[in-house]
Amino acid sequence: MAFSADEGGDGGFNEPNVVPLVDVMLVLLIIFMVTAPLMNHQVQVELPKAFLLERPDPASQIITLSVQANGDLYWNDQPITRDLLETQLAVEAQKTPQPQIDIRADDTTRYQVIDEVVRTARTVGMRTVNFIATVDR
Image (cartoon, rainbow, N blue to C red; front, side, top):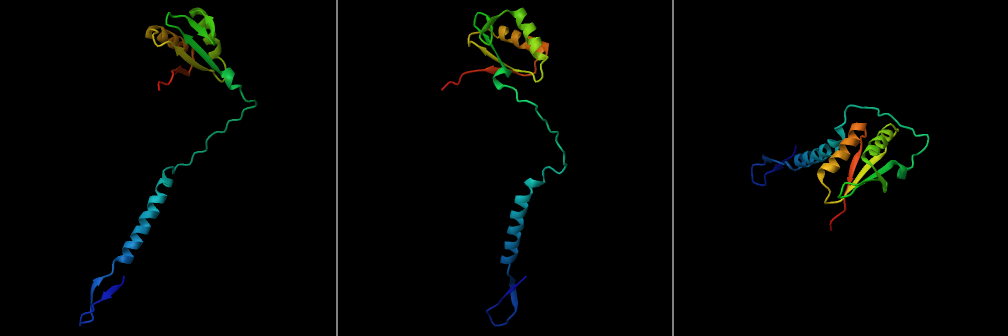
């Protein structure tokens, strides 16, 4: 560490020059700030790799269930009864990979009707049930 010479008459060193020390500390601070986020994952894990023999058609993997305000159900725009809905969902639940279920309902549909549809899907083993809404701008 360098000391500045006193311009007065005695020629001794009175004050230490801390500018180089501050420069070094700032550089170290920047180095630690850059490297700290890189040290979050210290445990190395090798993730499994998945290989598909053929790519599934994305359009066939989505099932749209429409529920009207009066309780009528539609499977991909085709009318369906509640009993047939349960058996059809049970068949789809056995597929690998399972298709995605999208529920579209009128805004005046009673929650009980929608809850019955969701419970039916969950009971037969469907893992993914989504709700579709429109964006209000």
